[in-house]
Image 1 (spheres, chains in turn cyan, orange):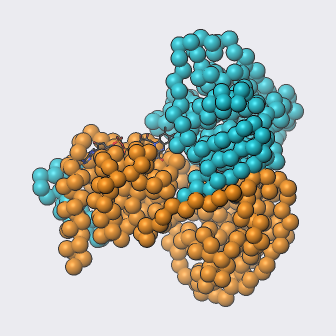
Image 2 (image 1 turned 90 degrees about the vertical axis):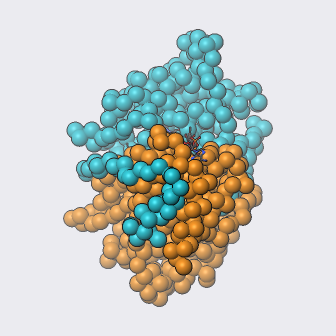
Length: 259
Length: 320
Ligand SMILES: Cc1cc2nc3c(=O)[nH]c(=O)nc-3n(C[C@H](O)[C@H](O)[C@H](O)COP(=O)(O)OP(=O)(O)OC[C@H]3O[C@@H](n4cnc5c(N)ncnc54)[C@H](O)[C@@H]3O)c2cc1C
Ligand SMILES: Cc1cc2nc3c(=O)[nH]c(=O)nc-3n(C[C@H](O)[C@H](O)[C@H](O)COP(=O)(O)OP(=O)(O)OC[C@H]3O[C@@H](n4cnc5c(N)ncnc54)[C@H](O)[C@@H]3O)c2cc1C
């Protein structure tokens, strides 16, 4: 089974994120970049499915040069090879443009199963997986907390508002995962050494036969006018419970007309 | 005036409050037309009419609900083509955003998520998006196709505007692609009878500090006294103390109530992602260094097993 797992590089989850006034895009230089946490769960699931069904795992990342670090991490965890789409024209892509590029790259490598995280921690749109399913005409099995496949059929438990749905399809298919699904492994020393020798193919737009007007800020179907930064939440009153904590809490609520 | 399509978020006709918020917003932008997919329109009709849906497109073929997401996107795509609405508004829930995603690709339109407001500026719709945990407000617009906007629940106050809802049936020939994934079974977790987490104006959440399913009543009782919903951190959910549907945070629900009470929750970034736009935040934690105190309007350093029951009793006493 050929599995492709899409991973995004994002600012470190704990960092303060900001937009750049010049071009209204996320300031990615100001912060440490890491693999989107949710994508670690997608990589782990890809590795486990490959181990069970005898498949191989390709990592796919769209993003600037420094994305190579995130690719390296996925390879250190055990993925076999990687595809890195890099092109200056990609800057400022919205979800529509991002999904167009990822779809072109997926067609180029071929796959039985595409795995993604259910959400990137920076923009948090959760749009990309459903857009990819639509573009590629694939069954959409998203927000999965459990995945089972025999290499022909696939069944997932999709988290819903009321519990979960059991969703079935035939491969090829697209799956996005939630963090309940597994416990991502840490790269071992051996894994880190092996990763150095694994093949990473770099593609630009011409390799994907995409035009610069279809991607990046030029190809985006949405645009940012401007933004404002809100003053950070000021920490409020802090009391130590000396037997009256509960009543003090309610007195505070009453002061705000919340009881 | 052009129509504004509002996708109805419902479970068998039980309409979610966010839909009433969307209808209220849509009335300010054009003529609201609700789009109802699935069974239960008879149950929903009154509610939709009460909030100003002068027209409701109804697509209730059984096939539409046996496959996830794609059929709803195809119903909307057909209406976007035939009705040329000024915009499509959907609830900014996991499923709402997925419908928006597919609809965008199908109709060649841009999509904006996390909108807390939409206004018309010189003939163009501009959405205000709350991003980076509410620290930044972005104004953005769709530049191609029909604006598709996913609105945050609890961002608008729903206001009734009673009308008669005209039912217009829509027949959709589903594409083969929309039938590729099939819902084999729906599993319902028992419901608590408390308000819906994302709709509630008060949420009381418990974390690892609650230390066991058997202790959760201490959280539930405060929630009940305040008329609120019960939430939980991932630590409490993963330990099996509370169902996943109650998880607040990055992969759980995003809530924005008038009051959020965090008990025995440290305030990890992934938890804050789901609650930091709450209007008032109160925290109870025995660790004075817990990061949750950085964003609390009021914090009690103490044992939740002392503080919560006393607060519950006090609320009950004040309510008489
Ligand atoms: C603050 C902010 C708000 C934004 N709002 C919008 C908006 O409203 N509408 C819009 O169209 N765009 C928006 N964008 C742009 C959007 O972030 C990018 O287009 C992004 O590439 C896709 O969206 P996402 O990061 O939310 O991904 P999601 O859809 O949340 O990501 C889900 C999964 O898709 C995969 N994935 C995502 N990106 C990549 C990648 N580059 N390479 C490999 N795999 C990937 C990962 O597996 C990830 O877990 C916004 C950006 C920012 C910074
Ligand atoms: C990809 C990803 C997604 C995630 N998504 C989510 C999410 O959606 N929601 C979420 O919540 N987390 C999420 N997490 C997990 C998050 O990082 C934290 O691990 C989690 O929020 C911790 O839960 P907690 O605060 O209950 O537990 P802890 O961090 O263990 O905190 C427990 C707190 O309780 C206090 N305490 C203990 N006993 C008492 C007592 N008797 N009285 C008062 N206080 C007491 C302690 O001082 C401590 O501060 C995610 C993580 C990842 C990697």
